[in-house]
Length: 109
Image (tube, rainbow, N blue to C red):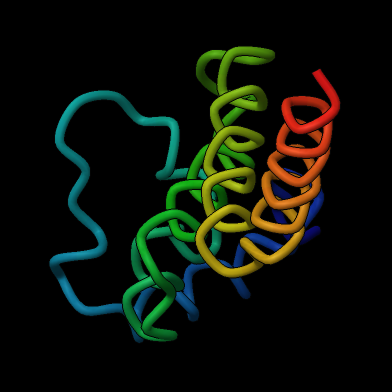
C-alpha cells in the first residue's frame, strides 16, 4: 500500500519536491513549511507576487502549524494593506465628503 502523508499521496509529494531548487528545500527556523507540497516562498517568488499579498499567503498557509489565530489576523492585516494600497478611492471619497460637510457646517456657524 502507498504511504500517505497529509491526505496527499506521498510519492507525488516527493516527485514535486525533486523539481524544486535546493534553496526552497531549506527552511531556517522551524519546520512549519516542510510538510507543504510547494512552500509559500517558492509560489510567491515564481509568480512575482507583491509584498503584502505574499505575506498574506505565507500566514494563511502556516496558521495551523504555527501561530493559529494570530497568523490569520496577520494575513488579514496584509490583505487590508493591499486593499488600502490598490483601492484608495473609497477612502479618499469618504475624506472628501467629510471635508465638504465640515466646511458647510463651518460656513453656517
